Length: 162
Image (cartoon, rainbow, N blue to C red; front, side):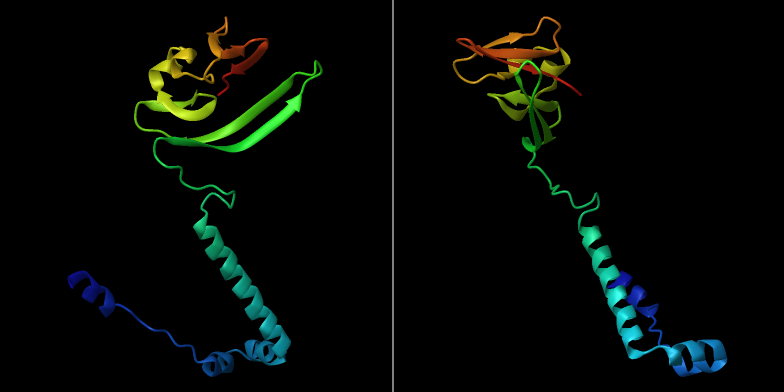
């Protein structure tokens, strides 16, 4: 095992002899001897907490926000916001995390987040991704900023923001 043998040759174990270190420095000797057992225990506790925090942060490189890998070709909602404006119209927005295949981008299919062909989004042919539920009619908004799904007297409008 060529590389491991080479690595093991350079491994060193360093052992500190505190008596020698303290003998060289009277100031260190005084500080070390004047510390109470409770001080040493507190110092060890603080070091253990720091190590635990560091090891926990290494598991979540971007912070612990519940982020995890999304299966390739799928999307998931990570945040939902609801409110009503002054005209008593309910407004909803959501943040979606997608992991799409090459040539696909985040979109909407049957009122759910999904990966769709990038050309649909680039050309703003919103209704080609089938964003409405079965039985609803899809219409692109006049300014191409989104689409509306209508069924009877109920209309749901979706505007795309980036």
